[in-house]
Picture 1 (cartoon, rainbow, N blue to C red):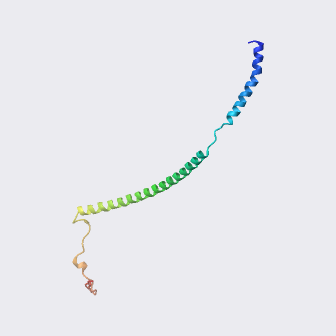
Picture 2: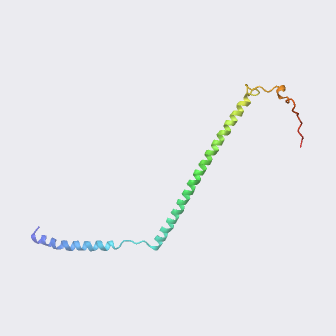
Picture 3: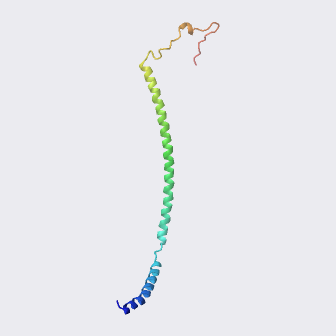
Length: 123
């Protein structure tokens, strides 16, 4: 390059830079702003979000309550099954259900001396 060309570039450089700065400032001022419709929609969505969060919390507490109820019912079922097994075992061994049990003799069931046995009145 010649000396003249370099001088011309030096003169143009500040002008180009100033045009670029002004252009950037102008573009920066053109930031899109939210409209009233968008603001209203945003409010509606936030209200809907709050409602959904409350619904989620309500359902989670209901889920916990139902899980506790299920556990209680399963414990009750387990007790009933244990009782059922006990009764079925005793029925399977009938009439000798309790081999170590000896029924009382008629002498043992007689009234003690001086004790009077009265028949019960029917109602």
